[in-house]
Image 1 (tube, helix red, strand yellow):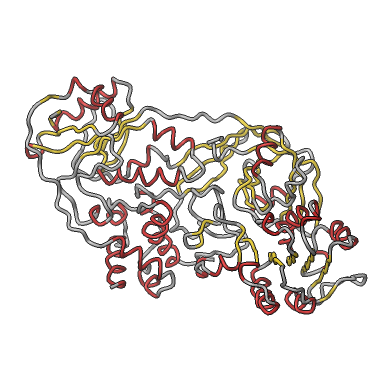
Image 2 (cartoon, rainbow over the protein chains, first blue to last red):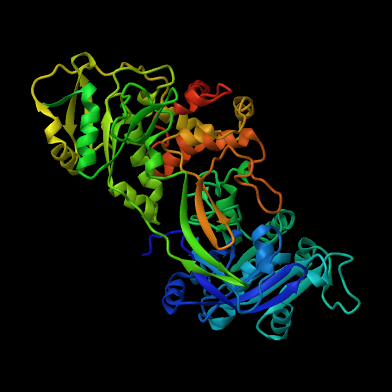
Length: 281
Length: 333
């Protein structure tokens, strides 16, 4: 294995599209076939990468496409800091640096035969979208698939075309919601906050795994609803994010207590998280 | 016994230099003794604990990890030369040598860090047993000893009241070094000086037990009050290894650098969103103590502190990790 740990791959932007205000998706092609093959040998849904622009630095976010689509990877990110700002200015044909895949993954092999409930808020759909596509590409191996996706406004929903595809599929239940006031005149989804919509939807916890990603306040208010529906802490999965530099357990900043988000995470069950010191998050 | 007169250490350095080693030794400059590259004519100051640690020669404070040629509308990768010069650290303190085994653990934790390992393999460590210790030294509280051999390839032991040094080879690298320097070594008897006497100040296992159970404690707020967040402790520490990756550019080129960083800095964990999981100095000081005495031992079965005392010697605010550990041990009683 390459021991030049911080030397990135080169990736070419095949397509770039705007998803929502300040949110953009790249489809990235590997410059070298050996790098593509090595990536997909290791990649499982939930893992992340470090995306870079020389001169600006690297930024950490998830891989938003599944290993079942192995000719490329996609990533979706919001303009927040210096690196994501520089990334947003790039167009198809230009190159970025990439390192990864790093971290642990969603244990979807253990979920075969079970129902799956995905709950996402805003820009947190991308880490979950790789899981959803992975499941849908292997549809027969899993039970019912329910997706509850909320955003502040209709404009903030990402993957609008894919949401339409999922809505049209008979084997997916998709519920979209926007915060009160965030709807447009032709909005056909729900209006309300994710926890309230979840309560109303009341999915069965029987043989079901819940995957929950979103802003901290949404997570905080959704967890009691899931508990009320009978989901146990070991069947609720989420991802943690922390500032990272190396991605490989060396640079020393992403730990929560003794758990390194880059290596022990980013995927955790609620049971795992309940053992971490809240004061370090 | 293989011996050399203490005053002839420069001859040993000269012989090793002639044998192809880059010689690093404690050398005084401007009233401060630091580990630096020896050159003919420079005196070696074996008595002092150098202000810097020998980690500087394994894990440089700034290092190019990737390089890109900048072009209009893009960039292309450029090669990075990896240099690992055959080096000997002469008169390392036993606490410096012990720190290397702690560093090996993190730089080989699943992902092997090639640049670190190349330098490590090219490095021979000749430590010098301590016959005195100051009030900041506490190696005996963290599993070390003034004449400890952990991490060393050879050790020099003071003898005949400090006039003589006795060389013990401990590894293959140490034997190769002794062979290279054979012309400067004599065979003969010597009366070894007693190593420094350093009573144990705290029980690091008891400290670890208290830490594992007391992430939330009012102790942290008060313990960190004096900390200025300057990071000097981390830079001087032989085991601290936290780093940042930063791009540095001129018109033609970008160099991606690995630079030393410190958990004491406010920006260390700051998210782009503005959220900071460690928003104040007490959270940062807790991380420093936890990492050294709880997290590191849990992960790697070794402390991330070797008791060299550099952090407290340097601290302008009088913070001392050994004193913190003493207080923690008392809290756990």
